[in-house]
Length: 527
Image 1: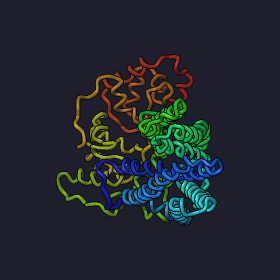
Image 2: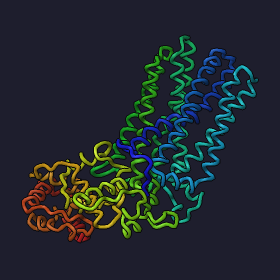
Image 3: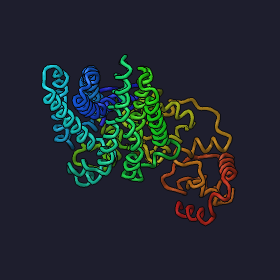
Image 4: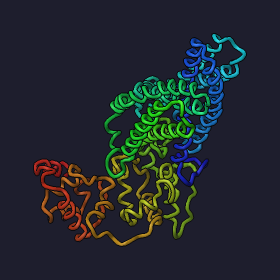
């Protein structure tokens, strides 16, 4: 379940994101850029355009350095990184798609070979044979995308693979075809964007203008159809996965807004190059590249965010615990760990010495095993900052840990382990923040005690329930939260705090926001 291989202090998720986004940005250029080279050479040969052919030789060198050299190194970097920080997911993907990976590696070998032959064959091969090497590269590069897309989308929408564990059931999953169409459009757009960089360095104004206009025709049409492809992609994602886009931690919705803004910005920047194509400067073309990189990064961020809390949808949690018992999980399912205990199940833990502070030491080990795949103590998604904002003491933490999978619309896996281990983890977490004065206003009370699971919105179940009752009854009902819903943590608010919280909710939300009949029905359902 946990492996003593790499303890990344600033956050494993952030490390994987940096390596992966850079590789993905280059790999999509590798797919679209190959087709750009072939069709541009073919067009130049038909028109006998010596200037374009000369530029294309230079662009090919740039293409090979970026895709074959940096792309290959960063691809190996992804395997190195995920193999160290998430061995369970890496092992699961290899075992489930071993033949898929083998086919992709064959495509990659052909891709590199064809790219090098194309690059070194400019002055040594006939135009016809040279173009054939280019076409071989295009087919192999797109074949790599076809295979990788199946595995990436499987991690988001595993489909019927969960029941059958059949290769094709997981490969052709619900988001496979919309993702393939979207990534194809991205690859074509990036081919033109990268070409603008090398074209911007030309001194021949007429040649630069021709190449800028040609490059723009590769970038604008794919960008224009992307909204439709994104809509198709979203429609194929199960609705429950979009829960993470709402509530107190709407990371996916923020990423989606950023992706949309950056995509529009990229479109506008590319469109403006047509105003004076002969005067395109390197700084401007690099700005376009940065906007495109931001768009790509935001898109990948959204895809990762909506997959939470899983690394493989409905199968493997981010912390390497399996969602359901399986013959292949080695006893590392949530159910098995609940029975045996996490410290007895994890293979590489340091048993705490008995005595004072043993519970905190044990809690630190549990944090490494179950939490550190997403959180750190002080850096990326640092718990110290989060807990200081919430001001949860040890009893509150113990109660909250029982409902982790309900928090933030289900973006965290459930706590797995015994009640004693849950208390040990709460003891460790309680050492990460400094207690402040207890909140004295309703908004802060709501943020610290309710906002992890509830929205401050008229339609939220907690708001509906409190508004349906008179102030005294609502206050009394909050004295025992598990009585309202068995999975709610047993937070002990004072009578004064309960009254302040109820008064704030009733004052903030108007009577028109929710009908009494609807409120009563929700309250009855919660009872």
